[in-house]
Amino acid sequence: MKSQLRCSLGHAVTPPVARSSCSRKQRLRQSCTCQAQPSQRSERSLGVARSSTVEMADTQGSEAESEVTIRRRPPSGYMQQSCGPVKFRVEATDLNTPRNILEEIIWFKAQEVDDMKVREPLQRLMLKTSGGGIKPRDFVGAIRAKQEATQRPGLIAEVKKASPSRGVIQANFNHVKIAKEYEAGGAACLSVLTDSRYFQGSFDFLQEIRLAGVKCPLLCKDFIVEGYQLYKALAYGADACLLIASVLPNRDLELLIKVAKKLKLQQLIEVHTVGELERVLKLELDPATTLLGINNRNLETFEVSLDNTRAIMESPAGQQVKERGLLMVGESGIFTPDDVAFVQKAGCSAILVGESLVKQADTTTAVMQLLA
Image (cartoon, rainbow, N blue to C red; front, side):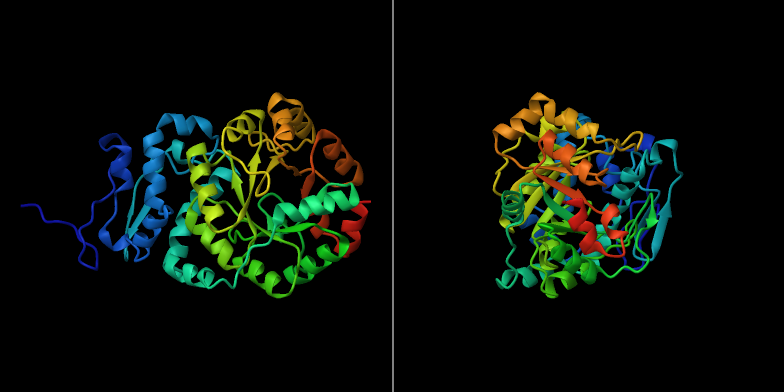
């Protein structure tokens, strides 16, 4: 009889097999029982387990895949899978090469979240958020109030140390100092990068900015693929979260919006195209807790053009945004007061700006000049 391969903890292991010899569901189950985390039962009860996300994607099939432009995982499976100290590798294929930097980030993010769950299980995050000590603030309301007071788009100023394309943007980066200067300059809200691998961000930045007494509501700027990340965002002081339509099909968006509402986290849903906006508008969106954003970066060419905002807002979907009373945020490519005026005329009630502000020595003055 052929002996069963086991890991160092004694659990049976199913080695990875070639793509042609197993189904997608079989590839997703290539693991041993020691990979299951103690928090999975709680996650399932809250509808936020990664397994539920996988099952949801499976039931949607090609319909869900056709909704998004960013593949959530390598088509042939991850090249390396671990079971305790035992690691298995399979041959890489051309299909397993990310098509762009966003896809690369998303593929890594799924593995990163697994590591987060080990270091900080869901139950621990739930304990942090269950005592009533963390009360999310009104992110959308702060933007509306600033817009009404200034007759200019409300500014979401981004606390951002680095990016994959630019590298380190601010060498003398002090997240708390920058956050306070943004607030002093007139920002309505702040966006805080928490992705560590590609943007040198941290969830600690969120927490430390909140504890420093900054009054501006905070957006957790990360690549959300699981409900667990929403609990983590809340536990570290976020008031709102980013959801990217090019990554998340509507079924996943619907689930994550429900989890966010349960936690009283508001949501910024980002689109890149008219098609993505049309799809997102099929969801039930509450103008009091959800706002939309147009990212002006083309995911295929990576060129940035403010004309993307104008084209989307002039479309029937853009008109529907106005009719439903949803706030629209202009993102990427905003550097000058003329840029601000351009997106405002196109129909944006808010702007999200990072690089052009954070690289300045005096960010308070930079905010004031941008909004002049």
